[in-house]
Amino acid sequence: MLDEKQKLTHIINLGHEIARVNDVDLLLERILTVARRFVNADAGSIYVKEDNRLKFSHTQNETMQKKLPAGQKLIYSTFSIPIDNESIAGYVASTGRMLNIPDVYELPEGVSYSFNKGYDAISRYRTKSVLTFPLTNNRGEVIGVLQLINAMDGEGNILPFAREDEPFILHFANSAAIAIERAQMTRAIILRMIRMAELRDPKETGAHVNRVASYAVEVYERWASVRGVPFKEIEKNKDVLRMAAMLHDVGKVAISDAILKKPARLDPEEFEAMKQHTYLGARLFSDTYSDFDEASSLVSLNHHERWDGNGYPGHINPLSGLPMLGYEGQNGKALGKKAEEIPPFGRVVAIADVYDALCSRRAYKDPWDEDQVLETMRKESGKHFDPEMIEAFFSILDVIRSIGQRYPNV
Ligand SMILES: [Fe+2]
Ligand SMILES: [Fe+2]
Image 1: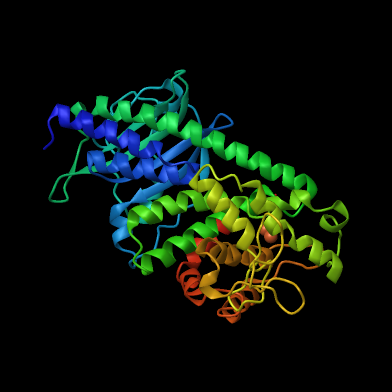
Image 2: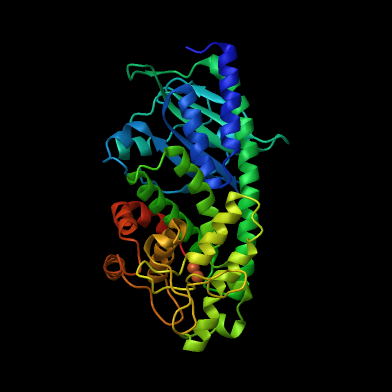
């Protein structure tokens, strides 16, 4: 058992740990993990306030996770609930007060909120002790709600959440709220850059970039863990990859309207011009200030390379657009990068981007059905795509599908 002082140090360190995460989705995941670990909670969910409702954003459940094959993730759907006094999370958001309930099936008389047993019924999980607290920023506004479920002792028995942990949790909740607001702002700026690109290229929508980024992160995580990349490194890479992947096509802002908005396939000359979006995008991040700039530059430059070496723009200097010395092909163009010459972030975004394009409507094609899409993905293993990464992709297909549903085209 930790004493008070150790607990305080611990919770402050956890605050620092989450402050390092930049991407909002990964941050919410991390906050949940860290908070659960602190009070040894079996499960938990995090809600974020959006348009005066609470959006159920992420959930974790150790017991249910253990029933899945190794490496698989829990699939859940997102939904939103009103901020009112009827649900536990709604009550906490509307009053700004923490609720520490020993057993949600035995709520005290006279409370306005009730517990929704629907989830337990579907999942055959038994929710008992629940600690629900507001994520309050420095201006005193509730920006979300964190709910921790079933505090466990060492033997797997469910206990009520300890009253003496409440102040620590509230301290953590404040660090978490500040980190979430910062990450939301970063996300908003990236989305604004993407909306600028979208004004030019109607295909580059918020939904498309969110899906591509999420697919890329999931495939990367699976591929890297199979390869034995250390957990800490994977987490750090996921963070920068997610934001970089969203910006994969941002170089299209520099491509002419006649090409971007052409409602048909491009002719060869137009296609050549279009290819420039790779290195024009990379140039936007050529003054590298952070891991994020570096990752964005890599993704932009390499997301159209192919594993078999037939992609573009190949071995070029992004600043000049000219072939690197010794890499000129016969036609004067740069030789394509091959296999592991292509950085992993480029290889993984290629998979995510092509997969999403095949599943989506384009000016020159209808969306394909899933069988057709998957067959193509499989066939392109070792041609367009890194075979190991394609294997990772297929091993998390249910996660991939749930991402598609999470960010539908509007
Ligand atoms: Fe592209
Ligand atoms: Fe794209």
